[in-house]
Amino acid sequence: MKFAVLTFGLVCLSACNPSSAGTAASPEEAKSYIRELALGTVEMKAAESFGGQQLVEITGVIRNNGPRPLKKVDLTCIFYDPYNQVILRETVPIVRPDKGGLKSNETKPFRLPFDTIPRSWNQTLPQMVMAGVVFE
Image 1 (cartoon, rainbow, N blue to C red):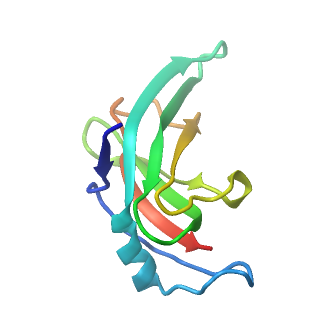
Image 2: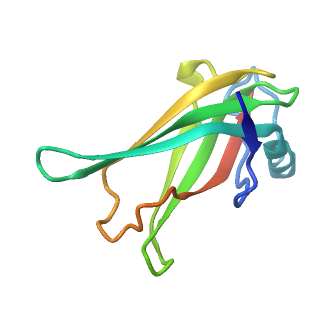
């Protein structure tokens, strides 16, 4: 399986320690760690529901190439119109504690459903920006 290191707008806005079992991390540590994460086989599918609403699903896998286990990883998807104006910005978790987090050298699938994208969307894959990581 081929992986691509995230190079499209990498930004880490937050890192926190939500449990006493974890290790506190500064935003600088989290931002630096994002380089250790890679997305692979990212695909987008769109369909129309019976009610005429557009349903978009983005699937792929995320790999943790670094030494630290993660509890949560958030990704911001930015959708544009044909004039390259932002029409929707949505932050969604792609790694969650209730799904077991993401261990070092582990790969996990993710699925991001969207049903509120405006019709003026340019129909291309959104820009994906790492918005935050939470270490175990």
